[in-house]
Length: 187
Image (tube, rainbow, N blue to C red; front, side, top):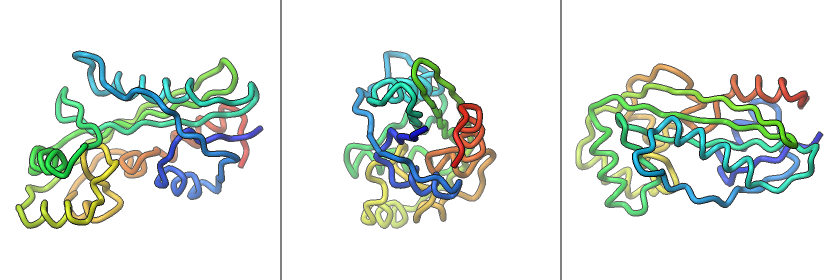
């Protein structure tokens, strides 16, 4: 049984390595990640993981593992910022409040699909202009939902979370291990 990771995220590779897993192949899914009009964050995230799993080419007996991480403030989805200006807007919005980080995982083998969604509540401290500008200068915001990565410098901005740290990074380890076991995968 071959495992294909349908993601270009180096963080997801690192998280799989924590489970002792090295995928047989890495094939990022190329899909449109635009939310539908009035789509709520959790269903959006679940749809993205599912669409990614369906988009990755694989043999019928290959396992395809895909995930999507979405940052949400209430009903508002904060995707990957397209510019430093947008990243600064996200960080300003997140500062001093709680938000949700949703990570959906989809595992496909042939026509069978297993899914899980993990929602983590995260509080970011109120950020000064110097903190925001320093973070933007680091370029760590690039390619990250909500404009930050908790596993890097932004970890200093997070005094509290309730849920799965690994899900906020990009792949909930306990849930992913359970999905792989349910599909009969052994590392």
